[in-house]
Amino acid sequence: MGIIGTGFMGRVHARSARLAGAVIVGVAGSRPDRSQGPYSSADELIESGAIDLVHICTPNHLHAPLALKAIAAGVAVICEKPLATDGETAALMAARADEAGLVATVPFVYRFHAMVREARQRVARGDVGRVTLIHGSYLQDWLLRPEDDNWRVDPELGGPSRTFADIGSHWCDLAEFVTGERIRAVSAQTGVVQRERAGHAPVLTEDVVTVQFRTAHGALGSVTTSQVSPGRKNRLFLEVAGTEQSLAFDQEQPEKLWVGGREGSTALVRDPGTLTAEAMPYSPLPPGHAQGYHECFEAFVADSYAALRGEHRDGLPTFDDGARAARVCDAVLASAASGRWVEC
Ligand code: SOE
Image 1: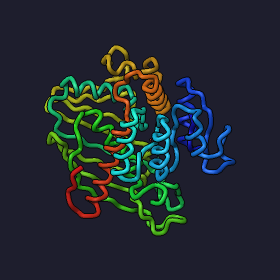
Image 2: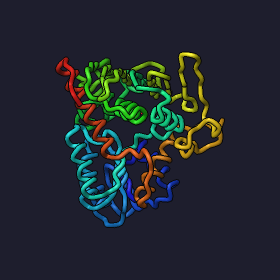
Image 3: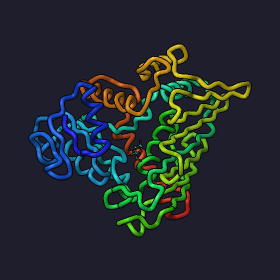
């Protein structure tokens, strides 16, 4: 396989791919001196004929052109989210991957927590009853200060949405994955808290977003995303209420799933004794040995490579899922701009 992108995510992908047994043939960086192996550019790597799969870990604006090139060359793809900077392009990418019959996946890695699989299975088997309310947030603080900078701030590189495309996409994917519901219409507000950032004045991409939504089956929901919430590092919180039970998952407390009931509530702890058969394969470590981001990433990459070998893996996030998240993101921006509800 090959990797395009040498930043934080490129390194996370490389580590997980090695663990999955993949051989790294080349790494292409933004400049020839950042590349490793015989290929000095992304194009050379994709067209080398030497790789079965390419990991695309570049800034967002390059996801679509590189993934489309790889698909045209018959190369399977693992592409970072947001899959594209607009929903239409993301849908085209999903269609092309489908037509070519290629494995094409997106690292919605929070799906790979055992307690998330547990929640999904409990909703699917009816424990929760009819899903009525879905809410939560995804909060970070790494862009709190005016001096905090990143390519994601720049719409030319990151696309028109920053916070929602980057982390709202994870939340929406997780909410839909756990509940089986589809976000059907949104009413959103976006806000820029830091208008002046070095090199980006005025800042055009959003720091904070609030969204209320309804699903195809009529459940109501809301989500708040922020990259400027002091003290919140990577706090993805999801709560689902149904007519029988509630479930809540907090990515910073990933060993637990709260099961709420009118007659009493419990905090389930990840343990083979309590997990359903569907969640067990995603519980890689004995209880008490906390499962974290890396383990989830490893499980996602391992399942992508299993799919490449022709094996089925339940819940593998594909380009179709990436395209859905991009479509919801488009609707969020359109609603914030118009002040109206927008269908997605
Ligand atoms: C930065 O906001 C980031 O690294 C995201 O890009 C990841 O997808 C998320 O998992 C953590 O935060």
